[in-house]
Amino acid sequence: MHDKKEKIVSLIMKHNVSAIAILSENLELDQEAVIELINELISENGLHGMVSEDGVRFFRSDAKVSDAPVIHREDHLPEFLSYDSRPGKVIAIIGFIILIGAGLVTNYATDITEENFAAGLFLVGLVIFLGGLYLVTKKDTPA
Image (cartoon, rainbow, N blue to C red; front, side, top):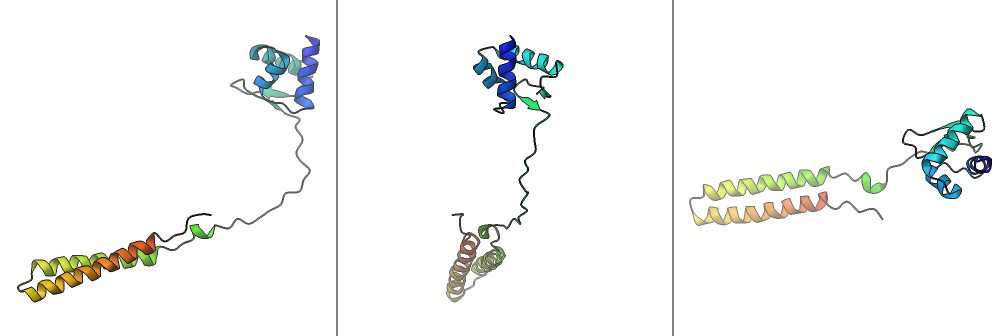
């Protein structure tokens, strides 16, 4: 058992292995036995740390913090996230209002001239509405 304890200490301290499953594969023991060995080493001050609540990992308490300097950077939003779709929405709403107006003119038309005017107004409103929807959906996809 002493060899297994030395191997656990070697794997954890030198090779930075923290997964109980990997430790059990290397030691050819079941995971409960590995956890028991780790708890024995902790009580003997051979290891410093704790086993996670679910028994999946061992977390060292004496892990070193990297000496590398921290590089601060500013995060910029990608251009495709900053697309302003408000003009397209306004144009689509104007086109929709024109469509409603064309429908009202059609309902209250008294002769063929007013009906023809309403049909033309409907087509113009439809073009404006679809143009506004096109501008809303024109946002480029990320590359």
